[in-house]
Amino acid sequence: MKKIENYDLGAHNTFGMKVKCALYIEYDSVAELQNLDFASLPQPVMHIGAGSNLLFTGDYPGTVLHSGVKYLKYVDMGLDEVLLTVGAGVVFDDFVAEVCRQGLWGAENLSLIPGEAGASAVQNIGAYGVEVKDIIAGVVCLDTSDWSKTVFKTPELGYGYRDSMFKHNKGRYIVTSVLYRLTRKYSPKLEYGNIKAALEAEGWKVDEKGATRIGEDGRQQALTPMDVREAIIGIRRAKLPDPAETGSAGSFFKNPVVSREDFERIAAAEAGIDTAGEAPAKPVPHFDLPDGSVKIPAAWMIDRCGFRGQRLGGAQVYEKQPLVIVNADGSASPQEVIDLEQKIIAGVKERFGVTLSPEVEHI
Image (cartoon, rainbow, N blue to C red):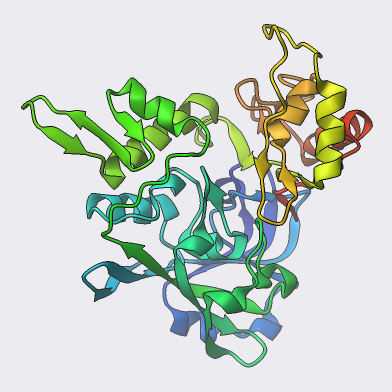
């Protein structure tokens, strides 16, 4: 177990905020976690993953816990379904790469999302038409109220858009491992975003059943999970900053969900309004939800308000993807990020009558 006082959290928040905590503890087993005397630790106590969805607004006065529990174990190798359990400290993208190498479907669209397995279950991370709840079969936790092992099945976890039961019971449960359910059945999901275009650029012929192409040997190839993963990685790298080079917490805002009436109001107001390089103006991008509501990309709204590339001190709206706020030169303060966040929220509210909600958790 690692215990360090007055610890620099720079390596544990992808925004690169220069903040410290009173005590940092990294444990290597669940038993070590259970044996901690929590009452004696600097308060409050907070558990984090890789810090890829956090904005520290200042030094943390208490204790930060981090899981060093890293394992990946196949527990059921069925004919179609495959179950595997993953330690909370495993880098989530390492898990995705492993299952794609094994030819298992389900996680490939979630490639290159930063963070760790335990945090994926808390945040219900998602991308390109897939949320992690779609592949989670259960989550193993410690209940800090009595330190008992607790296993939740997916329906018990209250999953919603970037939401879960854990977020409404902060501090009570610590995720120790996640059980994922994947499949060998050919089941690519290629409808979202520009996945289809990325695959077609690599020579794939895409239809409603999936994708095929002719290989160098003249034989027809079927799409694999690794093929989709590589396409997703290419898309993400083209428009998202590498946290190792430019500090950010990924998507800063949630995509707002509005009523059909509000969507039609927005579409009517924006009709015919051109933006640079668009003639005629494109329709409002959106995704119709089963309950009749409509999800609108926050990035589109932010861009229409003219925030792309805007800078406030060291904080900047990313040029390639306005949904992302970056620590442009490594000098941004937490307050500069917050001020830019509030400026964006106010601008979108004024133009569209929609209040954006941050996806990033403020600590």
